[in-house]
Length: 315
Image 1 (cartoon, rainbow, N blue to C red):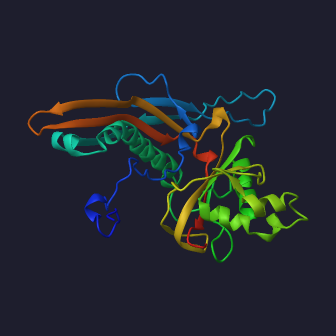
Image 2: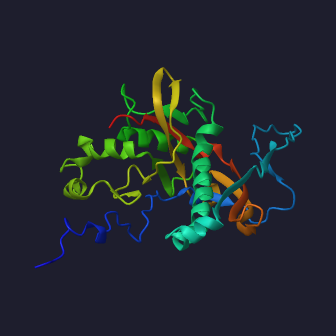
Image 3: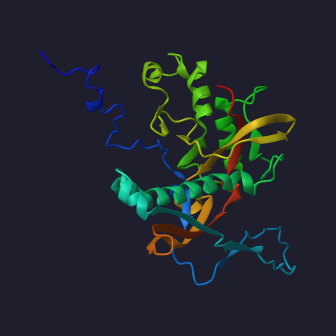
């Protein structure tokens, strides 16, 4: 009796079957823009000057002696639109006709181009702090260091580093409100395994840390010396510096600052938000998609930034 089997009817079997779904790459969340003071009244042109004024001085006054008149220190903060970004791709007419995934591909072009531009902006925001400071220097303000290598001899983070950052901000007269720390995943690993954080006597949530980890998404479950701690993989890394006799060779720049609205450390302006253009190129027989964006970023309050370098290769 004749029947059907794989061995005798292999021509009826599709040996290589393709799914109707496309695998998307995992993407990290972007958090930097929330701590940038965006200038919404930027005028025409690409450069903006913001005057600044200092403090008045006081002195001992003697009777019957003319008072001394002094002027306040003044300065000028110059901000420029510097970045003109683009992300572009195309799909050939023949590809559109032949590929099973045409609709999925075309519908992904614009959001993925937007994502690429915003990821570029995120990296630049988080690099503003270390790039604005002098490398291999303590960058002292009012006698307190604003750039240093964290931890002990192995250059890993310590809980005391959070207090050092707090002290530096206090010495610079930064409000002790809405304190933010943006750290590398290697820092979370180190903090999650420190005995003085995870033992029962010092941390009543010890069981939760062991069960669920120290963070929920991008934010720590607990506050350290007033700092709300966020995790980012976009911090500037690969730094090799010697600061105050401490050396690190593969460091990441962790950021500490106050996110109070009136003292945000970064300033930015978007001259042109992400704009999409598309057209059919008849000469090359393809649909072309281009997303462009024009913006600028700069450190506005360097006194409200502390950079702690830690080895990102300790795990």
